[in-house]
Amino acid sequence: MYLETISTIGIRVMVFLFGAAIGSFLNVCIYRLPAGESLVKKNSHCMTCGAPIKWYDLIPILSWLILRGKCRACGAKISGRYILVESLTAIMFVLTFMQFDVITGGLIYPALLCLFLAGLIVIGFEDYDTQEMTIGVLVYLFIIAALTRCLTYFIPKYVRGCEIDLIDGIIGIFAVSVPFLIIGFVITPLIYSFIDEDRRSARKIRKRLKSRKLDKAEEQKLEKALTKHLEAIKEQKPVFGFGMGDPILMAAGGLMYGWKAAVFAAFVAIILGAVYGLIVKYKASHSDGENIKAVAFGPFLTIGLALSSFFGTQLMDMYINYIYTSMHLI
Image 1 (cartoon, rainbow, N blue to C red):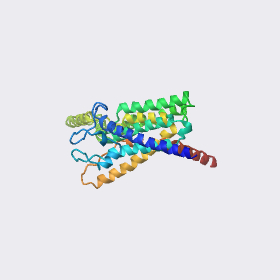
Image 2 (image 1 turned 60 degrees about the vertical axis):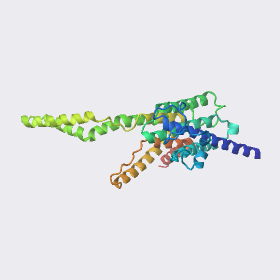
Image 3 (image 1 turned 90 degrees about the horizontal axis):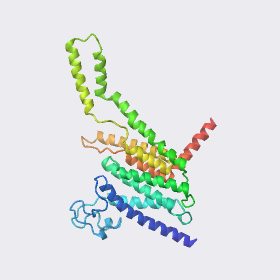
Image 4 (image 1 turned 60 degrees about the horizontal axis):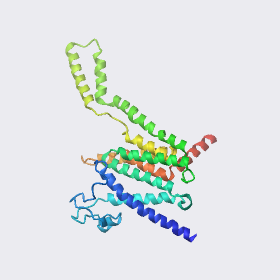
């Protein structure tokens, strides 16, 4: 019993250190991938003075604390994002491994979950920074999810701890991504076409032009106004409810965690997004013209998926059982 406890603690310490090291690499991905920079050809350097960073200043978490968040060469402030990502990755890796008895169940499934969480961290932060998701990271997430489902289906005795079967994962691909596609690329543009001022005015003018009671001068005036609104409509960019990355992200999440966890993640993201939207609206009304940064929906989706990794399926099962019991009591 004592040796088993020591082994468990030792595994968690190693997982924490490994997670912090992975978090250091994720920082590189978050900053370089959106800019199209290489992850391997360019050495780590200060973003202010450009000085190369020595190996002893690249120790995850510890180096940032020793340097007090400043560059050794020029003294410029180093973003707290670095230690945040490293610490977050390490903690999430440890929490993932704490869910499983890796001594008897093996490391494969917890390791796959950690690899997926690493991709979520990159997507969440880069979407927060740029409002865009790197297609390479989305493909990576889909590959990890597909590999997990294949391994759990073909060699389940070596991939223990996974309660999501292949059918559940396949349903999960479409459970949230398809509604997102319909809402974002069909319903939202349709609604916008009815509420947009230029489009509404153009429809009214067209209707007015069909009237036979117009004189020549009034008809020319309306045609000129119609042309002006049509030109404004052409200059407008397409309006979508979601970016294409959001449905792809949720398809990968559904394949990895199953449809119940995907639905839970979407619900969490909608709630968080709504709360954040209210905060932004409140700040904008009291900002005296100061610009308030809007955040894409991706970070909220990644938070929802990360929470789903730990208890999304269980909470959905509780909710479904509650609904089922309530219906039978009526």
